[in-house]
Image (cartoon, rainbow, N blue to C red; front, side):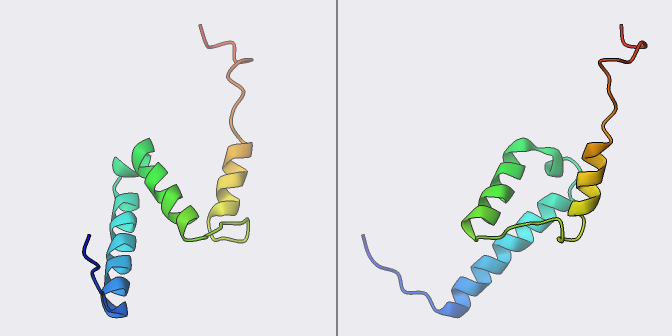
Length: 79
């Protein structure tokens, strides 16, 4: 297999295009709920050692919302 030499500028441009594509997908209402797409986003974050914490903007709200999930098992309106 032939070795292809790329300049850092080309590598940076490819990386930016990848990030832009992921951000576009996360902005799309359907794609942002697609488990296969979200798996690719998680893999990208993992591959690039990007870690989210409760200090990350928006994560605290997500944690709070998850803690407020209603108890549907005890709900008498469910048949």
